[in-house]
Length: 87
Image 1 (cartoon, rainbow, N blue to C red):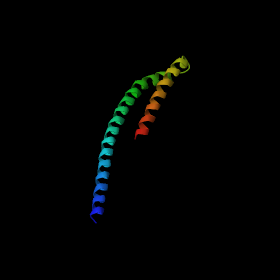
Image 2: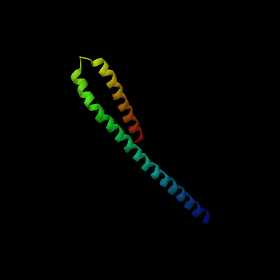
Image 3: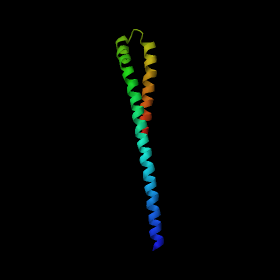
Image 4: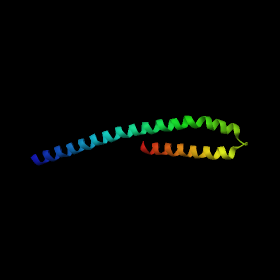
């Protein structure tokens, strides 16, 4: 009977240790996700005026503006995908 009690105690301690480790990792992941979100928000705010300008300039010099804008939008999309995978 003492062996069973000892096994249960060890198992409970192991689960507690795993729980504590996961709590720390989750906290760090949340902080990383918040940092990534802040970076992406900054990119979005920088891109919005460019999007508006590109809409207005569509048809004039849209090819060169469109290429640069497409690259910036793709980078932002990849950032959102990375963040989504973390959550």
